[in-house]
Amino acid sequence: MNRVYVCSCFGITEQQVRDHADKGACTPRQIASACKAGTDCGSCVRRIQALLGRGACPRREPADQGESGVLSAGIPVGASARAA
Image 1 (cartoon, rainbow, N blue to C red):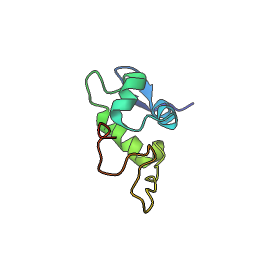
Image 2: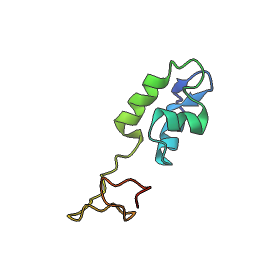
Image 3: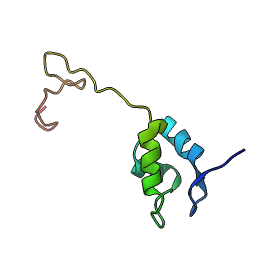
């Protein structure tokens, strides 16, 4: 098996970053929380960003707010959670 390492400090591979992205980690910070990649010397952060930008993390379409301007939580757009 061909392993391409992204983070040599913690031995994290491209595939491991992709696996964490598939589970919902879609930012370098979320990847770091999942496997520590990017938390030591930091030299891998740009590589992680590149992987996430190349489809390791599925793009999600923004939720349609419809004509009423109400978010799915029932809070009007522009209103604070405290005001609701």
